Image (cartoon, rainbow, N blue to C red; front, top):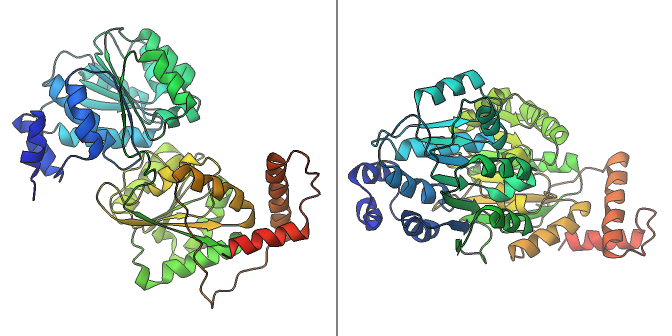
Length: 429
């Protein structure tokens, strides 16, 4: 077997970094690491597009650790910008592990964390700062964060940053950072927004696109079931979680809204106990979200119910299953959701529940991923629940909206019975 020492030594890393690589359990560089590391070491401007779970974080951390070498002065020389605090913590932990024997100082700053503590950490000195755009600008404007020595800028999860509306903050950061710097942009997808962002601050970049035809993580087995409503989905999920043959040891269940996530987590707690289930969504306090993720990571709980705030930026070890309780309406989020399992060289399984109103969105996800997944039949002894009137009316309105998008002349009145039966036949395939 190729060892970390021989596989990563091709990049000229020193003994301290090679030792940390080995301690982290890395054996061979992933494709994105193979391509990005030499270019970053050579000082190139890099745009790298690779799906989640492929080792993107280490592909920029390792060469930057080598370039920075050892602690210098008190002001940061490398700035890493990420969309959410969970990713801040993930990148900080990865950097701390890889920099363990170098003495390089790494801190993270993000909204919701103690700004007083962050000021004190900056005052004590650092080499790397990892942060969310709003908190970085806040600390800069008050004079606690100085950018004049920044020589390396990393924009990580660029597509998510733009989806969350951070373009104005990013442009402000570009204005106050030193002009002479190395720029690195990493993203799971390349869309028009990311292209415009890249054009704003990267001149003559080296463009890397890793396995673009394989948009979903190769280690993830994907299944989809046609299930008509919330009650049936919850009932089927509970049955699945009770099946000892499924080995569902660490499970993340993604829901479309905070209300659905709360309702589902309450039902799961009734079946499995409050100690087995945690929930995270955008309304929760930062520390509560951190504690929930940590509990799943450490095996203290078995099930984490989440909205798409957790689809990226989570680094939870050995997630066995991702359940898409709802089909996501932002189609890229499907890739990021299922990327929470089957990370790097491990295996995992994703299971999606699809209602009649979700089928239109699911077809678009299949087009995005380039992979058609046949519906798995429900077990013969499983009986679905009757859809409540209000839930059915909501789905009827959604079907009408979809048909109007496909056919502007469609008049609506919800949907004809014949057409509804057609959708149901498709879902039963």
